[in-house]
Image 1 (cartoon, rainbow, N blue to C red):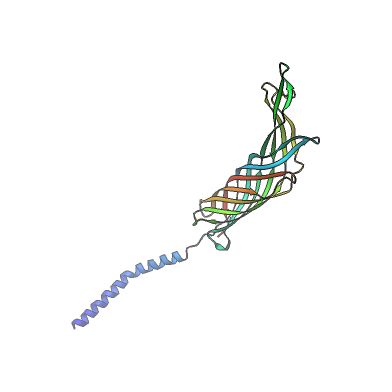
Image 2 (cartoon, rainbow, N blue to C red):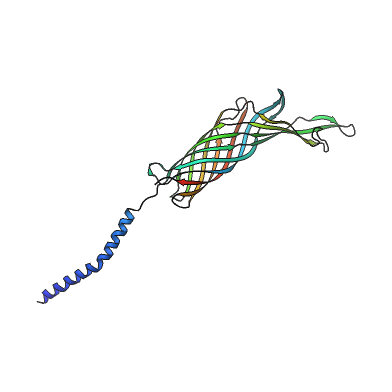
Length: 268
């Protein structure tokens, strides 16, 4: 009889325990289902931005006026505005591998300065002095660039590295040519009354090419405001492969520039 009562009491305790535990088991099941079926956002971005760039020019060219040589120039440097449209895509449902095409207008301005040969003239007291001058070319090299990059996002943090190449269509190549008096002090150009005179303005480079090609690398960050919008900041280094001037002249522009933009996610 005691054994029978013990079995009955044990069965009642087990049934009561299962009854009390069933809500917890159901809640845990719902949590697991939610975890297993939580939607994953697949980012596919498109957007635009703007920025500014610095260009260092390796150059070798001359400037003429009415077929007469004015000056010969070598290396220069400058800066310019950047405007871009870009996409950052994650193919094959990847969360780290990215592919990024960009269409960009790059204003690759540069200034080139070279000394001119000294000219002997008479000073105020009829003494012989050497007139020292320099010549300056301010060039604008507007380029429409198609850039293709591949890269990786680091641990889904928004930070990414990428590398690739770019082909640029040379839109224009215009320059102003200026000469400047350096010494002796007090001498001016009669035409301007100052120590500077612009001899050529808005002149087109005769030897400007059509296409240029560059290698590029970048580092960027996407701040994801929400699942649809991200702010993008990126720094790009550009190494020239070809010259913007036709041979025998040379113009290769090495650039560093940064952009800031807004991206929209059209993925699911």
